[in-house]
Each structure stands twice: as structure tokens, then as C-alpha cells.
Image (cartoon, rainbow, N blue to C red; front, side, top):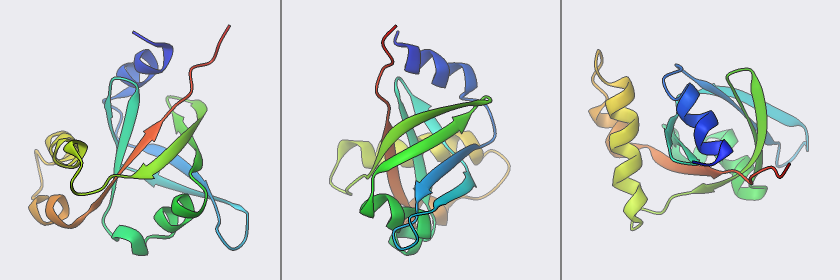
Length: 124
């Protein structure tokens, strides 16, 4: 298991993560608190506002992001997952399984835009 996979697995049950993108117009950091899912060495998010969300517009313009989880911040690269990707349904199920036990997320699952973040392994 990679260091990234260990880090994500250790904190996978946390309620949220912090994502920092770079403002596409301002060039300034834009930090949000957001639900997430983790699988192996990838993190997944869903944007209820789809590509109208500022953070999604920012990462489309500049995919370099920072993720804070478990008190640690790591750089990553974020991409929108296309609806014909095998990851599309996987992400939707992953996040609804994590957050939907006490709320109805059927509409959010159907209409949200899935995003994946990958991380470069740090060499010792």
C-alpha cells in the first residue's frame, strides 16, 4: 500500500476534507470544506452545483489543488470525471454510501458532478 493510500485509508471516515484551488480570475487560494470519498490512492468529490461551482471552475482552469485531511496538507491534481467513465457510477455510490445513511441523497447522487484527485508519491 502506498503512503497516499495509507493516509487516505486512515482518514477515510472523517466527515469532510478541505480543498484549496487557485482562483481562476484572482489567482488567490480558494478553500472549501467538502464531503469526500477515498479509494486506494485517490480522493473523490462531488459538486452539487456541477460546473457552476467556483471550485470546479477553478480546477478546470488550474487542476493543481491542495487537500487538507487529518491535519496534513498534500498537493494533488483534480479532474472532472466524465459521465462515460467507469469511475462515474463508482464515485456516486461511494459518496452516497458514506453520507446517505441518515438523509436522502438520491437527487444529489444523480445530478452532481464527480471529481477525482490524484496525489504524487513523496520520495524519501
